[in-house]
Image 1 (cartoon, helix red, strand yellow):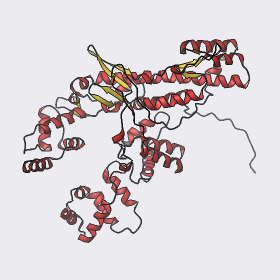
Image 2 (cartoon, helix red, strand yellow; image 1 turned 60 degrees about the vertical axis):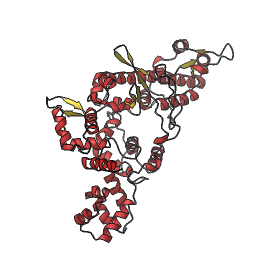
Image 3 (cartoon, helix red, strand yellow; image 1 turned 30 degrees about the vertical axis):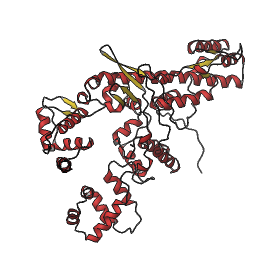
Image 4 (cartoon, one colour; image 1 turned 90 degrees about the horizontal axis):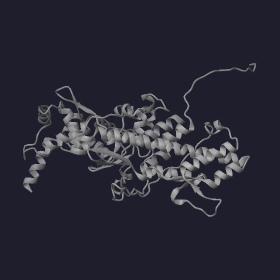
Length: 487
């Protein structure tokens, strides 16, 4: 029989204060989601109200500005001998918000055209998150799965790498690459099967592996998807038959199986035709300097209600405890909003200062930039920069861009310097647009021309950038030119 005993243990663990959790959450919300979240908090907290909704039904109920309201609140606390450290404690828990929805956009003094937000839900994201909630994921796996879902594009493909997903979870969640891969494999088998794949080949492979046992032609189809997907895309029937040694009947059966799959798992949820982007940051030229300003709705006019502050001064017991908690909630929200706006503005201004060449001369002047560069200049963690730039948009004289668009990898130059991948793509596009009719440049020739301008880009790098621009190979462009002449 085990005798009961008492033991004293000292352990260390990382814990986030509720106020920091709220600040992190606000930072990752875009302008529309922030507006929705604030509305929910205002409706639940009687000490907060929008400035435009101020009401004065009688002399005892009036609205006060933020500064005077906070001063009055502190004065009330002193008169009631409330403990100061009680208001600074971390005992209050912020109420979790519901899923955000989109709303109509606002006006800007610098850009008078109204920006209208998409009123439809991101149905693919909602569909996947609802499955994650009922799929018996652990708390850690749920956080990883949510990060994966938010990293998907409109076609359902995973845009971020494993390292980027791990960085987005920091600093509150620290995981290894293997843990993210394990959750990724589970997400890929949610409905629609093949979602969160990193390329069409992997998507087809996952869907084939999910076929019922004994499906005719599945073994040959898996082999084609793994080793000869380019031949399948090009309809190179004879090449496939020689490469696999399969009979015409077996090959036909396997191809019918592959063509019956969905290469874009998110296609049925595609709502890009109805999307209107709403900028969070505006950029304008002031003299010879580019200046960033936040959207007016990023800094909502909130007021503290003096009526309830007076109640806090006069009441006691449970009523006073309730109002003190709501006052603490209001103060933390205002502090978190100020921190969010300050961080977003600093990050945006740092990006604009670095990419001033892009604003003046276009993509060909884009400079290499990574999260670490901005984090060092602003003085924050890389994960903070990642949150501040995810799903946030900047309106510039050249158009509206996601903040992450301004981050780009680099290519070496012959002089030992670096040039951004975006600028290299722009040069490739210019070379192809100005190539002689009927004599398209090969990837090797483009590589040589880039080297003559000082950019070291291998043929395979040129091919990758060309494909990302949606430009065909030299043989495809030659055939297009011939068809145009014949027409």
